[in-house]
Image (tube, one colour):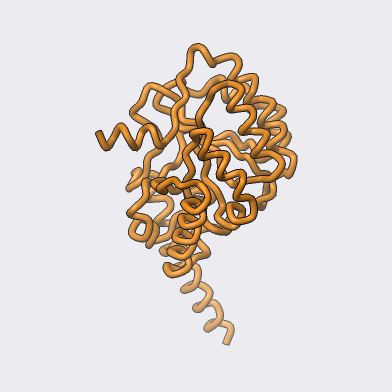
Length: 237
């Protein structure tokens, strides 16, 4: 009985690795069907995990203050809960993409459930933003063996720079320096406007925005900020 248990456990672990971990490593290492940088001489600011009722409106105020357009990868269930924030994002010229209906890893999703996550989030975004959805970023950058097939209608956008800004201490110690050190062209920067996801500090977005404002103030005259929608339109021309 013990040996049967061990055998089943080994088979289960192997299946999980083949279904999720190995595809993630291969896709990200060889950039299969994803983009991690842009071809434009500018910086694409992107934000994950929102909308958050407290921090996302504050972030939109900050971006408006400096005339910056950004891209938001949103959680569909939060879109339905805070539709007025999505409406504002769209009206102010930001691009909105899919970040699953629930903030759940693709490693834990069957093909059917992954497809539902994409469809439900797309419908929620289109309902409240009047935008066609072109972009997708899976939570934690996790893929499974079916992700590229099931998400083929979207452009999967990863990042060139990630900062660990979901932790307050990281924001305090290193975020500003790392933002300053990031490339001023061809780059996709990943930040977070919600701190309620697993492993995040709830107040982290407040500290992120303090650093982001300094960064925007310092580089507003030297740096061009672009949205993913701008890149998509350029590719179509």
